[in-house]
Length: 373
Image 1 (tube, rainbow, N blue to C red):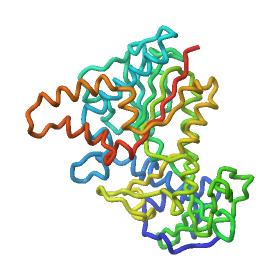
Image 2 (image 1 turned 30 degrees about the vertical axis):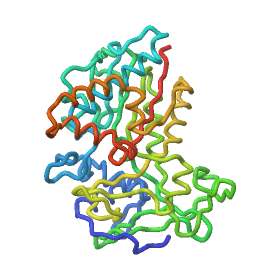
Image 3 (image 1 turned 120 degrees about the vertical axis):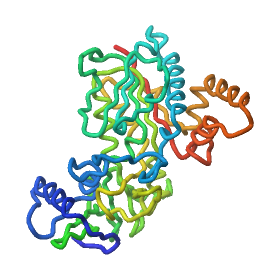
Image 4 (image 1 turned 90 degrees about the vertical axis):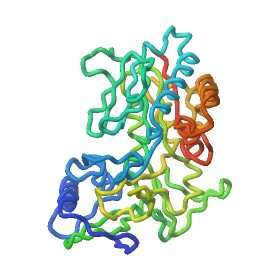
């Protein structure tokens, strides 16, 4: 095990205690230096009930002072209206032969901020019911009161859920991949640590030399493996429900992660600024990494019952709305054209969501259909 000076920071006493509790749970406690994998550190920093970033009672999303980032939900009702329109189009396409319509579906949003949800500001929605599951909520897609029968039709939606799951970090050293960890020193400082090498058989998804596909890992390369995101997708798919899966996020194919990001994709966000000091102010900043769309899609295809293979698709956010909400977009464009030439909040929001220089290409959408039994 080797300690690196690449990243180091001072942690609060509260975070140190949470870190040591997690280490003790894994059999590595004690009063001296203790080490967690980076994935375990990230889970504590984001989701620990006492010190986790997403557990704090504060506003994280938006443009107001004190927020850290904004998402598509910051555009107001328009994003929710677009999702409703796209869901209706997809249900009509996939569900007509099964005799189902959108009003038969429960809308379940996973990962919503407290008091949030994309339908919060939508005047009317087409769904039978709406539920939001936030951080710490039991991942149960059936209504708590039993009004959604087991296996009932749902639209299971998320927005930037998967990029916020812990990632396993690896560094290439001496021709092998080593997992990265975080070591807490007795004085409360955190240091990045290189752990033992990982044999290919233990992690066959790590990039290996493949000249035919231009894959050539070099010493010093980083690879951030979003395995927890894929596992979460598998848990969602394993539940007894049918209908639409729609996930908005930012990610890459496995090959893109392996060939285009030698510095990894993990980043920190605070006060609308992105930086690379992943250990700074643990619990006080957001940590995120690109998802691997291949792994999420594979999780849906491998589910029992599987999602219909021909329906599992990834599109840019721009393409998704143009392909599946075109009638709504045309109506919105006509309404905007009828407005005065002055500032239009809806026109501005539409540009933010669709324009390739804004969110249109930065974000992608994984969508899939599982037919009712």
